[in-house]
Length: 303
Image (cartoon, rainbow, N blue to C red; front, side, top):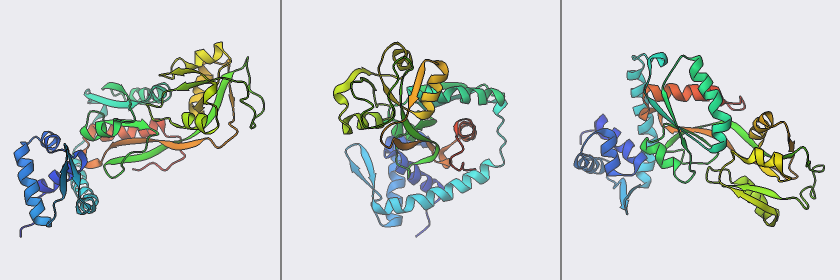
């Protein structure tokens, strides 16, 4: 039996990532019957169903999962070799790039990213979209978002991921209403702000529940943007990542940071994109630029 050609293997890799015949056809600019025919050939070649339909989703079999890594890596190397002959000039690129950020990600990571773009003399149209932890994985896979920064953990077999900054939570209050020394009773009689975990920051809610502090929640907000001004004007407390708290304190000198009386670490902020073989030269350049702009230096940065 003849070996599958590169187009068949690329169809397999894209179908594994997108889990949809229609979306795969759109990504590859072919018809859906063409994708179905290619899948039939691949099933015959590998003597396995490879994908089974469950509702509207094409779910990979164990054999497909086994094949995906080596095939994706091989195609990526081929693409790298071909693209290596092409020069990408950031200064001449004026297309659109879409960056997924949470509300606090916009406040802490967007300024250094925009500054890095200016340093390179690049003027793309940067579209920032609000990141929803429940949807970002599929948005990345489908290409509606080029790059995302989030503490949410996603399927690393379908995406490229690298951590850029550890996350340690602290308590933030007004200097006019300081907390006592860090200890088990430091929050007695105090009230909290709880912010939506839609962006993936679930630690504060988990801590409030675990330590019996939910009855002390006085304000539930959808976004972090107005929280610093609320804290300055009240005696409320909020739990924030340390790097965010330090940014807010720089803007609002009336804020004070206190250590938590329990371990306050969560999963690190990580940068996610599609895998290398699915990225354009502009997307790969943008990934390198964002890594350099937001990395804390705690983690090794891939080439």
